[in-house]
Each structure stands twice: as C-alpha cells, then as structure tokens.
Image (cartoon, rainbow, N blue to C red):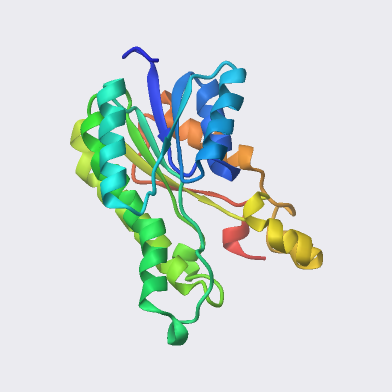
Amino acid sequence: MSNLNDKVALVTGATGGIGFEVAKRLGKDGYTVLLNGIEDAAGAERVQELMAAGITAEYFGFDVTNEDEVTSNINAIGKKYGKIDVLVNNAGGLGGRSRFEEMTTDFYRFVMALNLDSVFFASRAAIPFLKKGKNASIINYTSNAGWNAGGPGAGIYGTSKAGVHAITRALAKDLAEYGIRVNAVSPGTIDTPFHAQIKESKPEVFASWKNNIMLGRLGQPQEVASVVSFLASNDAAFITAETIQIGGGQALGI
C-alpha cells in the first residue's frame, strides 16, 4: 500500500467533521492518510471518498480511550508503514454537560479519557515510529475552555483541555532532542455536525454565536485543516510547544 518514502499521517476521530477535513487536506499535501474512528461504516465511506480523490488512505477502527486498542493498532500501523510522520490527535469532545455537584465519577473519567488520556495513549504509542519519520510532529487540539474553564456544565471539558495544553508543551520538551515537534490548535466555534442539533433546534442561539466572534462569522473545518497542514509542514520546522488559536478573535471576547 505504501513505500517508506511516502509521508504517513495518522488522524484520530477522522470519520467526520474537522477530522475528515484534516485528513483530506493532508492527503492533498501528499501524505498517505490513516483515518481512525469508531464508526466502521463511516470509516469505509471516508476512505472510498479519499481514494476517489487520488489520496492513499486506510481506516483503522479503534477507541482512543482504550489503552490496549490504541497501542496495538498504532504498533500495527508502525509495523506496516515503517514510520509515522504526523500524528493528529483530533478525537475528543464535550461528552455532555454536568455541574460538579451532580457529576458522577464515571462522567468525569469519560471526559478526561476522551480528551486527555487519548492524547497520552496515542502519542506514547506513536513516538517510536515518529522517531523514524521526517520532520515528524504531533498536533493536538485544545480549546478556549482550557483557559476560561468552559461554560456551565462544561467545567470538566475545560479541565481536560487545559491538560492537553500542558501535555503539548511537556511532549515538546520531551521530544525536542529527537527533532519531533509538538504543537496544538485551539479551534473556536466551527460550523460542523458537532453543532447540528442546536443549529436545528435553536437556530437563533446558533446565529447569535457569531456575535462573540471578532470576525463576525463561524469558522469552517477547512480553516482548521489549513493550520494543521501548516504545522505539519517544513514551513513550520522551527515551531514547537505552541498553541494556535483558530477562532476569528473569539478568545479575546468582544
């Protein structure tokens, strides 16, 4: 499927939304793209879509919160392709809302696992193969919630994303000696299926979100993908331990 001279990118949570746009962009950049997800039918469809566009792609179905699944699948990827050039830890999410007083330990652990454990498991498993990559890097996803602690009920999401901000810098320190760069992107409100429910049920609320964004509109998934593409490229060869806000000025508030 691939020779060792090809660039190889693994994108977690890549069967839809921002993750799929990132996979598509990296494919256009010349990477063999390995998509991860937990919806196998969607994964197969996305691979067909990429292949039809002339992109070499393969799907690996595993749960990023499951240590054994992550390790075994990334080891299989490393064995098959010989290296990993870019790991994009895109998988994550709000997981629901809960105030701390009512929060179950299971909910706490689920959100932390989805957003923070997943980055740790995937990065740890990928490091031996990133060491064999060219201009290798890891790109994580944090959020404004990592700084402002999130809205009502999103406090543990904010806590997990603050952890991603810290682990990004910690990994950058740890891996600098191998020439492996580690950065993060912090998308603002991006118009994806993630917001489909509120867009349909409360269109006026959805429409009002742009009022908190300096550029006066929501972001598009392709606008996140273009920044990920830049961070993975040689143009960003001297950038590590950074987080780039992709929110149209939303982080500053207006």
